[in-house]
Image (cartoon, rainbow, N blue to C red):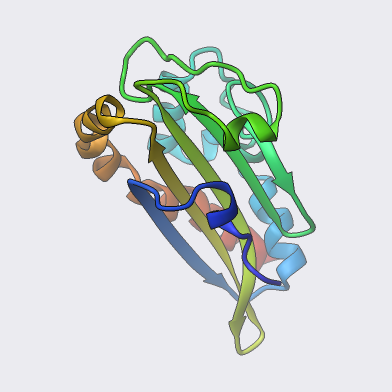
Length: 178
């Protein structure tokens, strides 16, 4: 169970997050539990996501969300998935152009925009435990995008801890209950 190669998709990010939650559960059970977490089960984070992506139903799972527009599923494996979104993530206009395929993410260079990589995987945690990991990387295309990212950093800093405290915690609890 190796972690996915994030550098292959987005080397040298301008910003990023990393959360890891260990569970007393088999890796497959933990991965299955992670895939079943719905936006409605993470109260604040789910509402923030639905505000940023109008029309998103509260009962959709995070895994389903990250596999449909405006996201692009880049890679999915036995115990990992990588998704992406591009655009001006700091605007209220919700400017997320669709990507026709994974290769378009690698080569995205639209001025004034960012590329965002969302990675989730399960890894060994020792002592018969496994861990669920969530990592996000943001890459900027140019100086204008770097300034835009600077505007949204306080918002990211406020809400990104909810990934671990809400969404990952639900998955770990569900996996440990079996």
